[in-house]
Length: 445
Ligand code: AMP
View 1: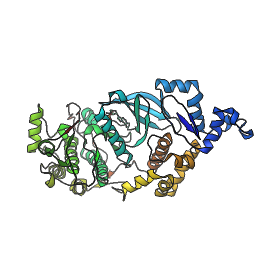
View 2: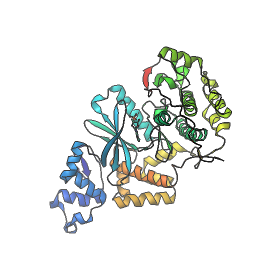
View 3: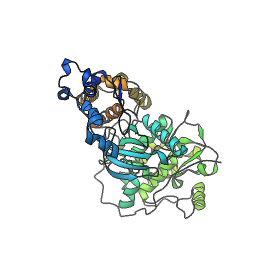
View 4: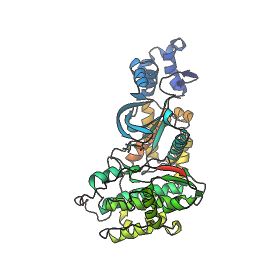
């Protein structure tokens, strides 16, 4: 349905709340010409792109048909499939107004049991509170009676698992650049008490320019304090910390840190530290912490792996120790590694248009404002839609345009390694030929 001014118009394929007096002025006159005043003689001539789109969604046969058959979802034009998960399919899509490319994660409501629904709402709420260069953005959630669509930032460079599977282990410099970005994302999450609980190579995506995007927050949780205990086994067994196998509860951050140790080992060697034919044997390997770092792995990296993969959580490196390690010393970030107050910055960003614009510098503010105005999205729209509501197409357009401005300001720039000449030739193919890792969710006991 489209809500225009005080009028609600039934729409196929979803709910839209494009409330705005100015919008209601011309679109409403189109839906009910008897209401039009003398100044509305030829409203089609002065329609903004937003008005044109919402009008087409109500009146244009082709657009309505595309909405019905799923070629369009909300304000997005849907293209081919780009991936497939346990409960979802992922398709490429374009925003009809901004033309930006997005990834559309499609979930069939019928296939979502209570637990899957709970995981999904966690995914949404965690992603809504995260805004970091290395965390995949959630722009919007579109709901229809049969489906749920998560509109996500598009990461066109594939995932880390496939990359290592196809190209072999990463060079030392590429490992540094990749790991530093994952570390930056995890530090940021932990700062706002979000624990990912499913860090693995399959959930580390790349943009086409190689920027890391940590994805898949389905198993994430927000703790009241960083040392609060948790009791649900989440994640993929080869990445699971020992305490998940033998304790009835665990503290969140060290579990993410352990998974990062497994990830680092995988990046620099192309193999997994803990491998076994059965789950029982894998469990034993992990509990005993029995793994061998190949001798050719550079010493500083070996020391980092050993500091992370400590079986006793209290002895394991903390994120800050990882950041200060020798191996990462030559890494320079193009932005401050961790924004001063990331959570409050995001919260206020979403709380109101006024607050959010105050948080950005003047150039970015102006850029976002004028890009939205050009589309017909006014300050009034933003205010009426409360930008913390992911289920609004206005929020979707706003977040996309804001992110585009942030990217222009360099938020997706890669860190650099001081003194690095470009990557040497690929260092042999040590492809990890394992299966993709599936994640599990169960209560520990
Ligand atoms: P998921 O359901 O999140 O496990 O995603 C399934 C597959 O879709 C992933 O392995 C990726 O290949 C692809 N995919 C998921 N999210 C995105 C994204 N934001 N951009 C590009 N590809 C994605």
